[in-house]
Amino acid sequence: MFENLTNKFEEIFSSLKKAPSLDEKQVDEGLRAIRQALLEADVSLDVAKDFIAKVKPKVLGQEIIRSTSPGDMVVKIVYDELVSLLGESNTDINLNAVPPVPMMLVGLQGSGKTTTTAKLAKYLEKNKKKKIMMVSLDVYRPAAQEQLRSLGEQNNILTLPIIEGQLPADICRRAVSAASLNGAEIILFDTAGRTQIDLQMMSEIKQIENIINPTETFLVADSLTGQVAAEVAKEFKNTVNLTGIVLTRADGDARGGAALSMKYVSQVPIKFLGVGEKIENLEVFHPDRIANRILG
Ligand code: GDP
Image (cartoon, rainbow, N blue to C red):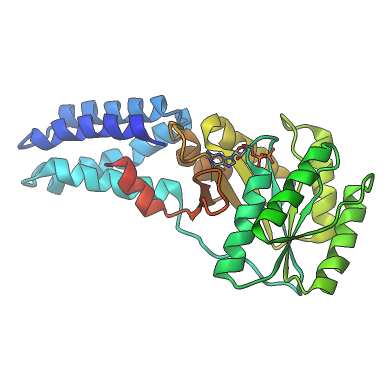
C-alpha cells in the first residue's frame, strides 16, 4: 500500500529540500504536486482539497520561508497533517458489558469479514486474555458458516455449532446462552455480506444490532476498493453504531485512498489493518507509523 504515493512524495520533497529558500510560487507548485499525488492515490477530492488548505498557511508562515531548511519544515508540516487526517491512534476495545460481551463485524461480501473475525478472535485471546466464541450469521451462503467453523477448528477457537435453516435472530439468542454455558467471555458475530449495500442487508444488520447490543461494531473494508471503501463506511454508519474500521489487504498494492479518506469521509477511525491471509496478519493501526511510511 502507498507505494506510488511514497515515490511521488519523495520526488516532490527532494526538489523542495534542494531549494535554499522557498517563495510563494515554489510553495504553490509543491502543494499542487502534493494534491495531484493524493488524487492519484485515489484520495477523495474533498479530502485532498482540505488537506492542502490546512497545509498551505502553515507552510507560508514567515518562520518557515525564512528558515535555513524550509524543505524539511514542509515535510514536518505534511507529516503532522497526515497523522491528523488518519485519525488518532485508538486501540481501545470496549469490553464494558456483562459477559459474554457481544461484538459484530459487518461489511460487503469478499471484504475479508470472515477471515477478520478469526484474526480478531486470536488478537483478543492473546492481548485481552479472553475466551472467544465466533458465530456466523451468514445463513445465505452455507459455505460462509462452514468457513468460520473450519477457521475455528484450525485455530482452536470456539464456534457455535451450525443448525441449518436457523434464522440470524434465533442464532443470536442461541449464541448468548451457548457462550455462557461454555465460559466464553466475548462473542464475535460475523454478519452476512452482499456484493453491494442494499436495504434488506441494512435492515437485517439493524435488527441484529438491536438484539445483541454490541459494544463494538467493526466495518471490514477492502483497501483495494479505494475511496469507495470510505463511502461504504459512511453508509453503514448511517444505519448502525460503527465503532471502528478494519482495513484489509493493506499488504497488497492498494494506492492508499481508502486509508487516507476513511476517517474524514466516514468519521469512523481505522482500528486495525489486515496484512495478509494468515490468522496472525492483523495489525493495530498506528497513524504516525503510516504517515512515516508514506513519507518514506
Ligand atoms: P468475506 O466474504 O468478507 O467473509 O471475505 P473472506 O474472509 O472470505 O475473505 C476473502 C478473501 O480475502 C480470502 O481469500 C481471504 O484469505 C482474503 N483476505 C482477507 N483479508 C486479507 C488481508 O488482509 N490480506 C490479504 N492478502 N488477503 C486477505
